[in-house]
Amino acid sequence: MIVILIVFSLILLFLIDVRQLYNSKSRIVIATYSVLMLLGFMVLVIISLDLPVVSPSILIEKAVKFIIER
Image (cartoon, rainbow, N blue to C red; front, side, top):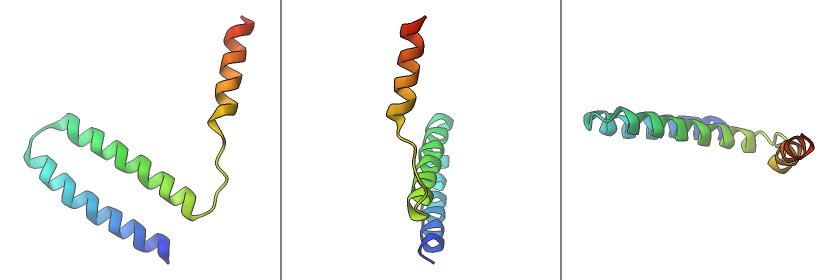
């Protein structure tokens, strides 16, 4: 129930903000705002559903080891 309430509030916030940004005619700002809102929405859903989150340090460690071993 809380997830649905949060989703509706974020959609409402997004629509209000994008309408104001659309009047400014700046496509880069609208795209950046949309991407950040989408990322925030995804993080919110992941946290709300208690899904396990992979630590980025594991991926960074593998990338560093790959670069060093070359």
